[in-house]
Length: 111
Image (cartoon, rainbow, N blue to C red; front, side):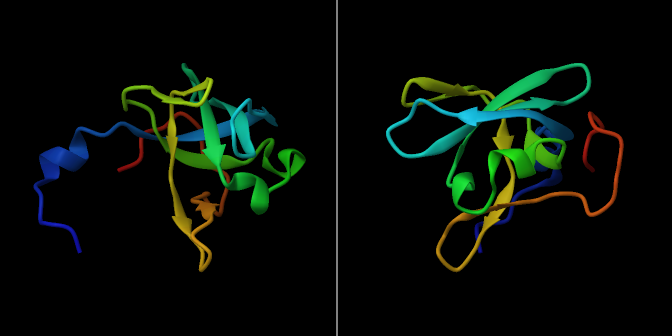
């Protein structure tokens, strides 16, 4: 476990539900996807490392995901990651996305 922190650290994160609206191959050294995600009033683009192993581009379009939208953008090869999509690693340390199991409004903040 990591060290204990206070609620203010968690509260500083803007975690929202988004809908994936477009998925393309990214221009990176390793195979990755560039996803356009609609968070309601904002559109974010995320380069997803490892998602190609478990998801086809077509299967991701329309899915709801959970993302942190207020991290400073990070350069990943020639791509810029503007959203941090939350996931958990499987046994091979590959990303499995956190996705709501039921339809919810996208753009809403997670609490």
